[in-house]
Image (cartoon, rainbow, N blue to C red; front, side):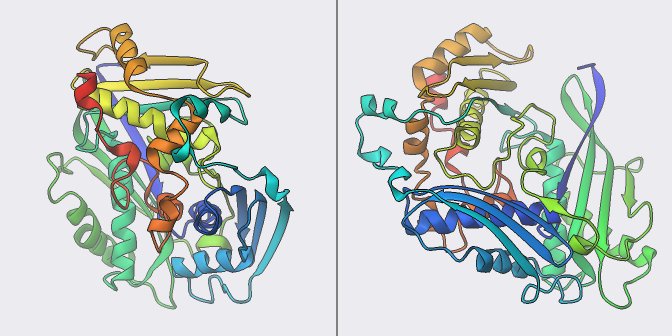
Length: 395
């Protein structure tokens, strides 16, 4: 990257159709694993005006009302009946129930280390984990800020401070960098969906957003908007309709917003809707855990960990580390320490993060909350892969 550059990342609120589809897909993962932690489940969703389509393939002892789960997620987003009637909408399902014998037959926690080799990956993929010193959670600043603005919009709506907002809003934050360090907020864009018979005029919306959202998001940040920061609010005018009435959604189209906001590479695969036996999901968490511990150990200011898996193998066929010139020691030395202190086998990842049993610990769902609040960084609570528990060993 050049010495001076601008980078922009986006996010979306829970009512955005793509976000709804991710949340529905992960709500199904939660419900299957809560009843039967050894379930195998893959779920995908599409949504449009008055219709939801859910495709799922599973092997499980669980009994899940898939249509009701979808309706419940949409109802939780807060749409009025005029925008999306969860009781009357059409839910179409395409389900493949595999033989129950194809579910997972043993808990990884009960197996000896050598026995974890029996869990081989079911697909080939290359995954990336990233961490940097932009924020306390070691995430890129643009996507962190875009996500915080989106959450503030949702909170302002749910608390009645901006009741005219639709559940469907999108955000974008541009950050100026010098020598790979963030130096100022270049721009903030909010596409605010509006609902109700008489939404306020543009001037009132702008004033509310400054007071209830932007002012609160940046109140304690060291880098704040300045007099030259461009703030765009519905730059093409207010949308008369929002949510599924206006545009469709699909699982996996917000993966960038859930990870690094395109500041760093990520797998092309969707994360939502997959049980822990899918390496394209859980390997992303393992790579992030490794990269974050490297940065937390002070070995680099930025770090990318790449894991490549091939069908039928338990461990990655390739591990790479890149620190973009910010390493305090050579990348080859960091890679050696990484391989000595991390086990990237599929069974080990599931075991170390307790991924089969986390849904039973949360009434509102574990994976469902990731789809709402973000798969990485400061999500709805401390995530297992966000711990810096191996930084000292790497150091």
